[in-house]
Image (cartoon, rainbow, N blue to C red; front, side, top):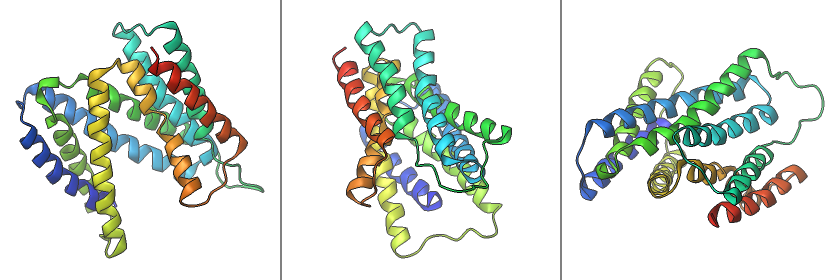
Length: 249
């Protein structure tokens, strides 16, 4: 899927960046490359952890790290959210963990949270969190060039990994159309994420961005008719409360 979606995004983001204008400065290239490589590393580590460990543990741990890392970096950089926003951040972290929690599979499972899986999970969560930090540091005047450079560097990594795989086949038919849809949605998500990070504190914007698992759960309920666990339901309630508290700051 990424083998098709990422090159499409490179072309579309290139057109968008050129249309929006803005200079291509060293900061855009430096932070854009770091963002793209960190994203590729996070995806690899996350799926490697899911392939070897229990989803019910890997997913929430990675999600919490994804949320906590940019908040910690924001505080180190001197950001001081208000009391209400700080409480909202804590609630949001709990919400992310609960919403990302998968239902436990009954019976004996071969998947264990081994030290290797733990390290992969930590790498994935930290890499995803640093994505937001790197994007936040990109120069504002460069407009969308950091996104284009980020996706270009990530595409190079994906193509290199694909070249080493003998079983990988490009999608055709419906999967190809889905890859195109993924590319468009990913561009929209990245553009809105960039604008949010530029217009708000890193610690607060990143926290709201990290609540995306709640949207995934809602879509799974509406489209796939999946049932939500009690823990996920509680997480969604906390997520709504945390959004209100952070937005009111």
